[in-house]
Image (tube, rainbow, N blue to C red; front, side, top):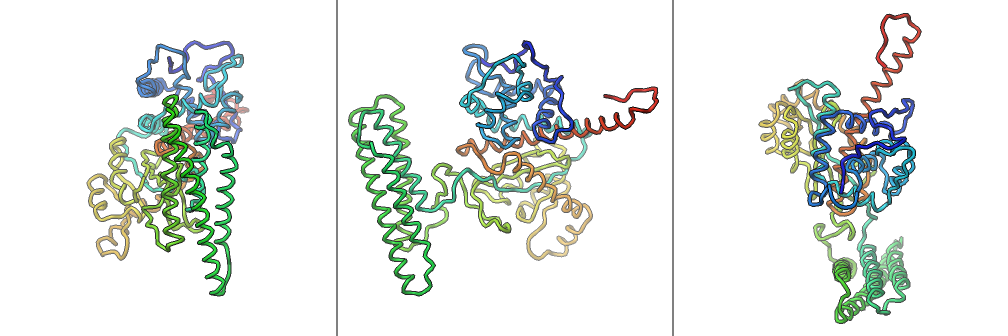
Length: 500
């Protein structure tokens, strides 16, 4: 059973619409809470968001029967706070249980001892889907446009760019990826043996240390700085020998693990959980076999491994090796994300660019953003989005396309790019870097969720949190200005009262 928000207030509970914040605070928490308060106080907006939450969170589970679960408003607040503060579930767990203002936003009074468990937070925030968050984001952006007093039909001018959201992985090399796979094979096989009553892997902790020690030996052999050809040749032979020993040890443990799985299967699995664990072990075995093959081909046989055959993390296989040519940043490990921001600093649309380049998503970004916000009639890009087909197709969608061409320009193209509207759009385009930086500061520097589905949810939640924070910052600034005016004119003899 789930409710959107508990209607019956308890003793000591503060109505969300009556919450007060310290205008002198420079922390992020009051601003994001002020934005959430605005969503709650706008009755039409709150109703629309609550309907989306009730319809799309666990749609097959009855909302009126069973044990009471976390309120849907609480789930949204927890997800937004987590991303806006760029924190993990451990810090979120501390905040929702002990931060008074956040607990007021969650609907808990001073005398209410509701406690949220770590796993409860993780499970419930994970119920938010990218599709649901995208629909909520449209409502939030429309509310933001109303706040900045955008008139009906007023043109929206967008700016589009992409950046890399890193995944939570270490720097990949063939030998440490093989160690990751072997570590999981050994530990998971040992746990399965404990459940099934086998004792073959009692020394699994030592086995993991043994594999790691051999891996470190192979790593250290590659660090020689010898300059003479004779010494370099000798060191190359030592490197091959160390890698061969490493592969031999890995294959020995893999063979032993396979034999153990056969014994367990012949005895019979106790339940479906054991079958799931067996399949998980076999998956890591496949990773280990692939890395063994690639190490053998690259180090021992001298072959070159094609880039598309490489995997950069066995835990986050969607991780890509991205080199954008930035100074001091030769490579980034993650997935590119494209955003489209308007002149009011609200993010209209975003897209996770899995195995895609900028020019491949240009048209779709504009089409999807225009479908959500029909007033979009201009957009600027950088040269990385240029493609002749994009130039032609975008002219059918927008009144102004500020997409600079690559290479030497024709006279017609030069005249177009030197026109005043194009120049103004290009000068305003760099402001999108501020939006990217704000997203990275508020959660999108590194994705802490697992899997590509978790990655997409994490990015969508960050966009929603950023737009809510933008609303909160606008209201915060207005309230600060109002307080300053009230203080300035407090001593004046007037026949009217300034708005509080």
